[in-house]
Length: 210
Ligand SMILES: O=C(O)c1ccccc1NCC(=O)[C@H](O)[C@H](O)COP(=O)(O)O
Image (cartoon, rainbow, N blue to C red; front, side):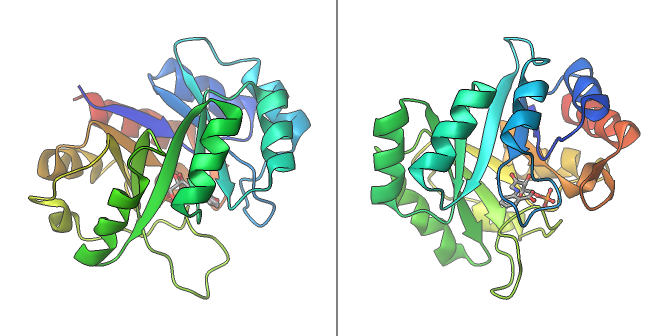
């Protein structure tokens, strides 16, 4: 059965429905340039509402240890999701924190998928996400989708998740075409950047389990 991470939650009024409607993972973004950024205090407040069967994922962009320490300490994170890290850096973070570690691989072409092989032994999961333009302020959360057919026949070296441009209308097809066991969404369940929408969250989670 496919499960889902709702990413970029920043308020109790959207976190609670995500949990109620069946998210397996909830994501908190620790990146000041993001409209979904949460402070350590806010992350602690949100994390306290998350039951044990739902995993708390911290989302980071090439983070310093100090940032990770404060985020892990305040929000009791279950998973570190790392964007823009090299394999040695991911290995160092995983060794230091001893927490399940995901690495985002930005995809535009079939060659981009090959980066996943570099993370064998240093990450627990690869999140295939759409590559954002070099000029973009964010490496994720922009509602961009990559060509799912690129995954066809690809031998995944690690457990993986599908991300990038998913929404309530396309997620069922995405799962059918790629066989993803875990899907991740952010802007596809928002009414505007950074503002999650309970109705869209519910519809997305319904479509995932349908
Ligand atoms: O969501 C953000 O603002 C963000 C900022 C910096 C790094 C990563 C970020 N999001 C990562 C995610 O896991 C998103 O859910 C993923 O990129 C998919 O986003 P979307 O295409 O908007 O569904």
